[in-house]
Length: 197
Image (cartoon, rainbow, N blue to C red; front, side):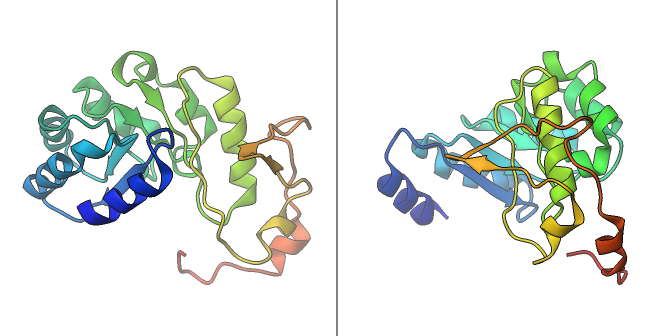
């Protein structure tokens, strides 16, 4: 991993931010070792999927890289509270599709317990992309929005308005509500088969 990140850093230079997502690949000792190895590359963040606020706090205290976490919470934002109370993460990656818009927006601890929020949108769901963009525009301390460009070839057909990305920035939808409506006729053509992904 160190060699890969070194190649990226050399290629893009010091002005482009690099974030590394380690998921749940290691135990906490492994995360600490990896974090220390990646410190020289001035990362935007190290993303870790940890179910333990104590373990994540130990990692945060052990490395000089901001810690991002939470993108795996497919539950109300209240599940963030133990992590926020222990200040276990610098950046809270809120999955709007999992927490819901209201829960993702209203936690009173967001401002005081993290440097920032980085809302993330579920892959292949254009509707959630618009919802996440509206969240970013309506709450404080958002620094960047995560999104995936992959997905089902028909993902844009299920909405009435597709968000526009120009020069690397998503243009905030201007229509009422979240900026688009669902096309239920198209959705009906693609019933859920019981599997994710």
